[in-house]
Image 1 (cartoon, rainbow, N blue to C red):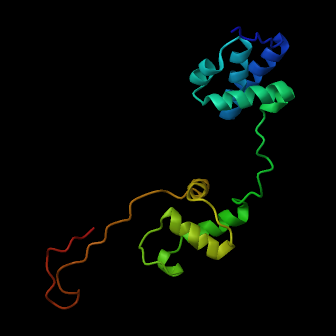
Image 2 (image 1 turned 90 degrees about the vertical axis):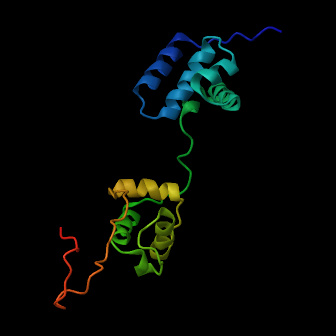
Image 3 (image 1 turned 30 degrees about the vertical axis):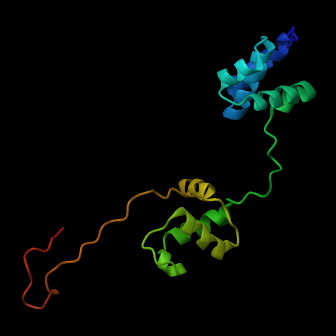
Length: 170
């Protein structure tokens, strides 16, 4: 069985290389690379292996390029719905993170992403995925860390006159 020889004009190859090299969108760069390899006569399975994607994605990218040209390589998720992590949401998240989970009826001493999602639903009526919450926390500069350990002194309370010297002082 003979393979179909594909011709991608030199000006289009130059345009794809420039787009691939200048973009900060890794997905767009991969789509450009797929078309460039396809234009060099590579087989779809070799392209998939070289780019690190599945064979069906290579086919979709090539079909979109054939149908729409370079414009077909752009990310088509711009109409993917309203943005949930707007300034209002992030401002409310800053306020919620500064409080304790017990202020929202949870019996945990520290926040988890899942608890923050639920608390933010109470505050804003907007539900996000825990992965999106992770990005939101990074955006507001919240740090991920272990809770500070608290150790109670085994001795009697201060002022009782029988204070033990084993209590740690920092």
